[in-house]
Length: 192
Image (tube, rainbow, N blue to C red):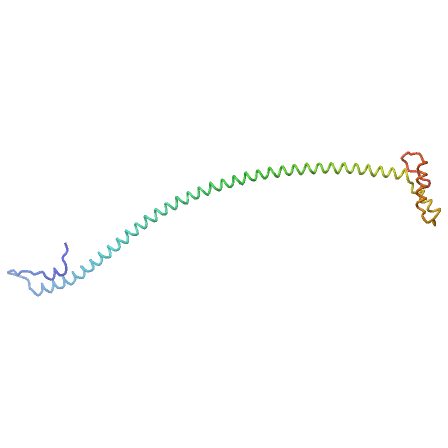
């Protein structure tokens, strides 16, 4: 146990036969008491500061432990979220691939349908062309057999001032065509 400065000041020495000089002892004791008082106060202040620092250290240790636990929890949560996000991403990718395959199938079916429609339309166009060619050939054959324009031209040259000169010429050409044998070759009286 440590003596207090007050206890040091109140110490009384007994005198012996050959004692010390009282004044020197008292002066020395006074100086020791002053130094000891300074050291005692400093020691008490340091103890108080040490207690304060230890309290803060304990608080920091608790905070560190709390932070460490929070960090571990945050890491676990982050890992869980990463795992969950990867799982969700995989599901989204698989759904997108499935939808893409479905869409691809629908587009393929639509293309096949359009190809079928185009094939049908092409066949209709080819049929129309054949029918139209046949119709035009029939018209041409009929026109060549029934009307020879050279006859109409000759009639118009003979009667240039006739009011309706075309009608009699057409009638004359038609009559001539009826008299001519039907060979499919155009009849003309004048070949230019």
